[in-house]
Structure formats: structure tokens, C-alpha cells
Image (cartoon, rainbow, N blue to C red):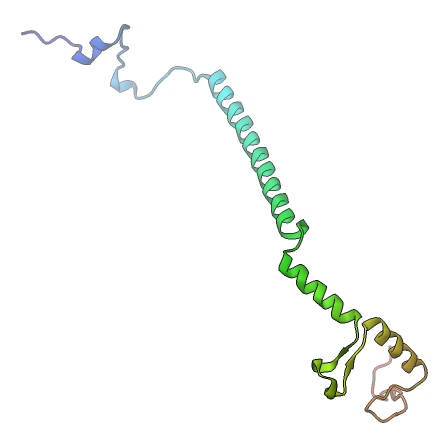
Length: 145
């Protein structure tokens, strides 16, 4: 039974397997510059496309979120609440919904008009004594600039 130099695995290939002297230590063939350049260029193009696609996706998601949270019509509950507040601000009502309370709620427009009239006629009461404006005494020890 003769063992020749080639192992059984070598028979799987159609071409002659090149054998190198282990003392050589490394591959002396030239690098495939074209393949390396093509791989680098392809990687950069792919990276650019991925970035652009991600930015577009983010922008779309952001616009959808803005639309949902800000631009869509408010819920019916919120609309009901706003309608009730607007009605309360524009109609007369008894305070505490009780005639005996002695208080009456008036429309806000009328209240603003009355406030302007009272302040211009000097009727408004401020709970403080009138006092002259205090003038700042110049500090004699202050440095002169």
C-alpha cells in the first residue's frame, strides 16, 4: 500500500493545488487592487443609501407623530369640555348655581369692559397706603467711575 504525497481531499478538485514551502511564511502574490477598490466603493455607496433611507424613514415617522399628536381634531370629550368652558365664559349665571349665594357670574367680555371703566374712573381699590416713590440716595462711599 503506497502512500503518495497527496491526501484524499485533493481528489475533490479539478485543478492542481499549489503547494508552498512553509519557510516562505506569507503570500507573495499582489493584492487584488480592483476588487478591494470595488468593495470599498460598494460599501460607501451602500452606507450612503442606508443613511438616506434611515433619514427618510425617521422624517416620515416624525411627521406622522406630529400629525397624530398636534394636527388631528381633538377628541370629542375635549371638544365638549371646551364648548362648556366657552359657554360659561359667555353667559350669565348665579354663583355656585344658587340664587341665594348673592353672586352672579357675568360674561367675560362684559367683565373686561367694566374693569377698564372702573380703573379709568379710579374706583379700583388697592389694599395699600399711597406713598411717594422713594428716590435712591446716592451712596457717598460708592466709588466714582
